[in-house]
Length: 226
Image (cartoon, rainbow, N blue to C red; front, side):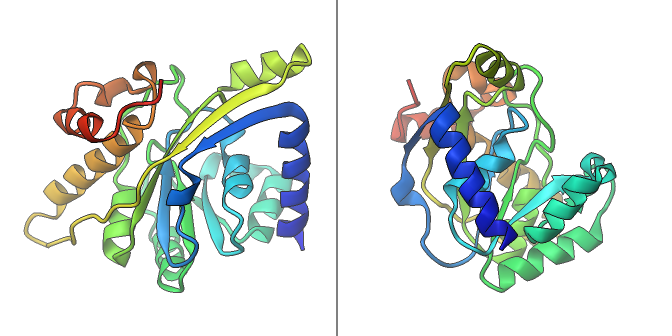
């Protein structure tokens, strides 16, 4: 019930206060497990997950710093999500995420682990690549612009609509993990995820992955967003 009400509220909010343009909706799997990954610009990003993905089995991993707020704790619980310790080995959350994926659910998270202060991509953590590889499920890359906190606050303050652009890429698989080269594969997979996201973003948003060789390859296949 809370999930349904939340989606109604979000639909009304985005309909009234935002102009949301989505490219690549056809790339979103209608069924089956996958890990949805995106860049992280502002506090509005988690709301976009439930606005964009209408399935009932979508789960968010929320940064541990928000656990101190009673309302957010209640809302995360009602929506079926959980909190993740970004700075320590959080085996409880990893088990939670893997169980949801193994049961056919969708996991949504930002590999960077926190909002980018400069809007450009920062170095990512390997959590997303580990979960996708361990569960053997596709990764769905998503690039978002227009949700920067300072931009959202300024436009709402001046009664202007928020212009949000979302670009959904093609799902892809990561190689399985091996004990011998686990760390190397995780790093390569994490770079792959971030370059896939970077390819969906304008140049100014690509950050530390702007000069990555893999991004250059991807841009030859899929032209960047203008």
